[in-house]
Image (tube, rainbow, N blue to C red; front, top):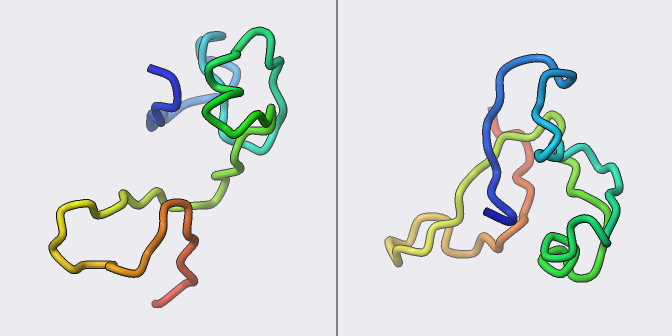
Length: 77
């Protein structure tokens, strides 16, 4: 699935060649045209190194009501 984020525990060298790491690197837009379109016609991957992935709340529960997709939360511990 284009744009799907999977958690992986292991060596980067062992990742299947069909997968890309979210490390801020660039990719060939001709090889991954749907990903290129999904990223707003950009061939630069997001850099999630050192980030904790948090899902967007679309349930209407009021939790994180002002959080937008892609926001980064500052450390709060």
